[in-house]
Length: 107
Length: 112
Image (cartoon, each protein chain N blue to C red):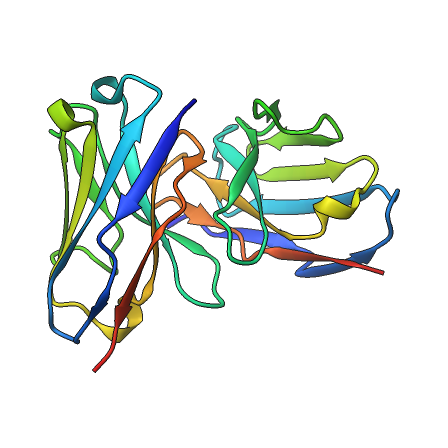
């Protein structure tokens, strides 16, 4: 199975900050990676697919980069509604696997 | 607008069986592969199973292989997950997913 190592596991930041979350794959997954955020009691919502393509309806302050084994999600200017848990998901090979999650909290 | 609506979740005893369903709309269901994911309380999401557009190819997570079976009825725009030999650790919200679009989920609780 492909292991996805996500960091950091938690992050404290302020409205307006720029934040970066990283996922590392245990083997080459090309660009078969998505980023999701999730609020308590809600389904995960995809922000990025194909490592760098913005999901329709997602705010442009979210961006993704990387390919192969190293991937990054950047939020350019944090908004109050962005405080949530973030996950990466690889869909290059079965079983699809998630990173452990990053809980983004208000400082 | 793409929509996935799950149903069928309930309380079931260990060793029991349950089928959960999903009705899709807003896209051509018969040409899309679809997946089941789940999320246990307080845990991250987990991929469970995937089925090809015509139902001929099915994949499963190791944790459910041999106990769960995915199927679809393209005439009804519906996806199913038959769950047998349920365990306490199968307790989760089950989601059907197509291309990053998730339903609201249906809660399956396995407990005596």
